Image (spheres, rainbow, N blue to C red):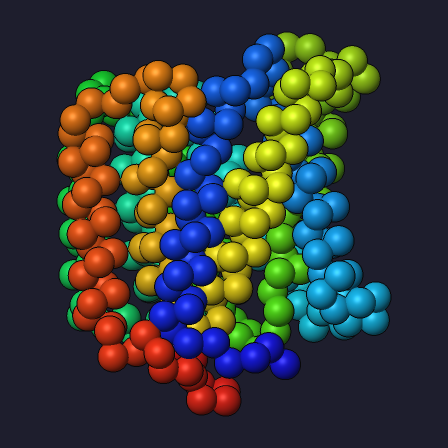
Length: 310
């Protein structure tokens, strides 16, 4: 059984995980001559291998097998859910602006709250609702940084991405006593199979196909490995571990640190200076997270009782 974890520790882990995710845009800018499917393939391979290695180091062979058994189909579905969320996010970018896609991610905390109430009987506090509303306002400010025509298809894909992320946030909360890190392995395997098919078979998803699609060069391999190791493996492990003591809606809210920090890393990596409204919106989101933490300050060092949801 997983050791008790305080709410404050869970918040810190979730914020650290989201900060890792935010490195994605900056790291992609470091690659050259590769497409999204090639990046996702090698990134997912890294995630599956490193997470499995970490589980084996932490639990041993028997413990790892037990973790997969305990996670069961729930862990498989959670891994697929976060994988689908990421893919839909990428697809949405082909139909509308980055800012509009990011704005729709603000739906995730609200849908997570509703799903958690329906399936986990988790009640969302008034402070969480207020914090989520403030964060949504911050995303609206960021939306003004990149005006453009609203695309129905892009909005639909972005909303579906947010929904599947909410599903993931709820699924990893379903069994607090089970180490759901195995879901990260399933996420990597799911995307690995999918991208292999896209790279090898002729589809409308990319122009070229065949074994040569796996050749991306050593420099690109290095940056994609960093993506897989730091951005995703470390980020997903930290975020999934946080779920032991942080409610689903708050997990999704804390994940908004990703779109807050991502423009900063992209700027530092490639010199792409975002508009002032992007940083202003990010500041509002950080204010929302600070409000959430202060409102729950009495819970920061509290550890849930056995069998109790945070």
